[in-house]
Picture 1 (tube, one colour):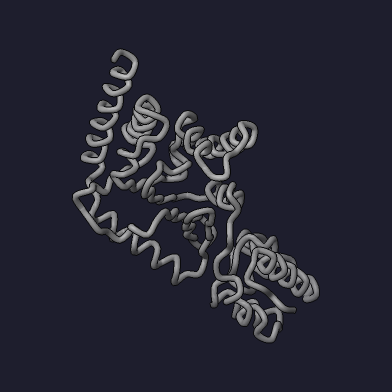
Picture 2: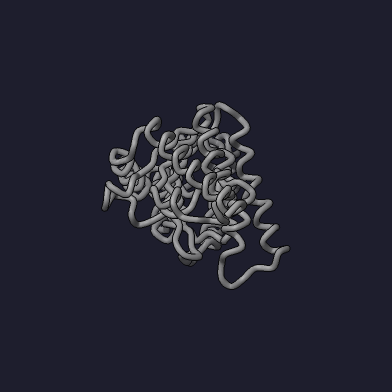
Length: 279
């Protein structure tokens, strides 16, 4: 069974796992017991949503008599392209118990206000129709609902100072956006840190990353670039992303210092908005 490096590969991998499990006369629960892999993780693997690590793959090979199939094809599953709406990552956010996200230029989607998100989604190329933009807007705003639960997920936000200074939608929109972030931080719903311009070069210069942890699944890292995104589950890659994040966090302002800066910049935008209204 040939497997290529694309999303279809993971689905086929999951189908093969399910086929061999059923041929062996095993339920997911029984295979979970024999391989010491959680029942939830197995279900995700069979659905093509998650990958086993090397140790899991070896146990699957041993228990199912797969002759090394599951370990041999692991390299083909490393990383996955994610569509613009990144529906799978949305699913992961909904399951996560801890999210640590870094925004280099824009406020992360999870924290965007409606006005800010509308300005961001309306600025891409090629231009989107109002209907297409609003469809994406609904999806983006829906993400924020996970913040309605005070306890889970725990959310840490690391922002480059450029996020605060980048004029998106005008002064009034920026003022509202920064005050929204400040309100979430003041209510202890999120923890926020800002990497000031004075830090200069830092470990997170290469771009956006979102790290997620789960109660019964291995952690993942989602990295994003221009019109591209990738979910990483390979333990060594995820650990490296976590270490890079921690390194940059060490260069950031404290939570209280970051809040003070965010409030200060919001006041600057408020003043600018009033000036625009009354020149």
